Image (cartoon, rainbow, N blue to C red):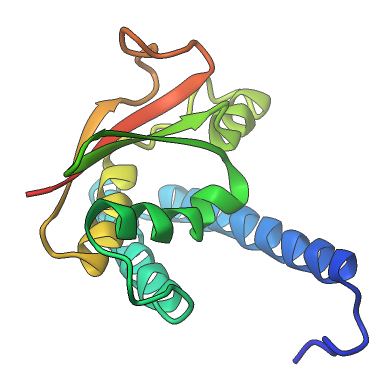
Length: 172
């Protein structure tokens, strides 16, 4: 356990940030290993499985720290604000009705990394849908996730050019 009684807030923050980046890097390395060492069908199956497991597990862990008085869309947004998405990305949320909101990523770090590594774009659509669906349905089984756009598609009409992907999260 970290010696929290001896660390100041900045040191703890820096340590946690570096750990998060390490886990993020490991996800990419794992994904690339699976793609190189499995058939395309098994790689896709494995990545979708891992995405689903991760989303549900993350939501279960976050539930330990979220106040129990949150309900509906506000509850989903609160969980999202405590998730890996907000830890790594410049996220935008916008309520569009009492039962739904938009979740969008501005200047996605995964897309930046893909370009840096010469991949053109990171094909995340199916895995991202699985991850979001498992995350939000773990919080509320009524949750539904609908993709508005993901790379390589350009931002949909009405979205700023800095938005990499956007999703509608709703309670059915």
